[in-house]
Image (cartoon, rainbow, N blue to C red; front, side, top):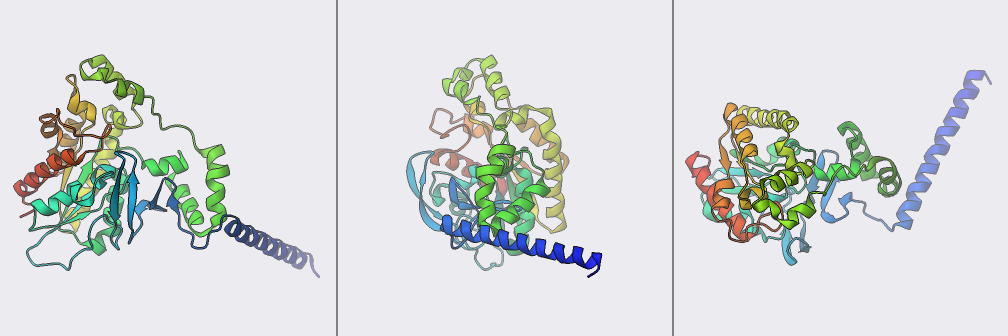
Length: 358
């Protein structure tokens, strides 16, 4: 046997041995962890699936879930396309379809579907079909990605992008799973985790825990936030914002805005290319609503960018500030049923004024 043939034979044997070993590890993992039907779900929220493009709601989910944010048990119904709410109806002439993009604020944690902003809009705008395309943990880039991904199945006439002050940042779900790893690596790892129980179990236990998770997502702002000195003290207000630079405080950082402008332009261009109208609604942080020392710098930046691109903007800060003595927020950003009601009323008016809804 020639040297080349011997080397080729050895290589083939080595590859076969490696494949057998990997198969044994995979079979062992499925037996040890008792997994029959593998699905890559987010541990804390099993109704959210982790996919190469980012987190998505698990389609056709119908279950009661306990909401830690307010202690309620609510019904979660996710339709076949992976959106919270009812199945899409056959297109009716003269009845526009409006897609609402967003993160957990639009999704409505702790709220029944009818109490969420899209759920309330369905009653306020009976002449339109409202599609709740919100997924907890998304940033603006992932929200636009989701629009592009689902457009052929939804075909909306109008799109409303819900913008919160940390949306310039990467999806918090991807951040917690993959730290600072670039997107092409996170997508590849997610594909491996989707197909392999062994890889999915080893990633959080060994690789991610030891090498990837950096503790970047700081919650140092939580203590001064809960003390509420920022309500009257401007210095304390600014301190909370600075400590929250990885969260809502990002909106006061100059480096946050180029990515926002890039994604707003992508939204505007995609909608224009497909004959859709587009608009932006800005959700404030609770500090801005409640504090006597509050400013509106992020809202002003959003408006300047959006208007340059021809996107109408709804700023919810004035309407929520006008009702700030009520129970509007569960935490720094998530709206109560009352807060969602105020937001939905403002959004319905805004959509009619801008001819996005009848």
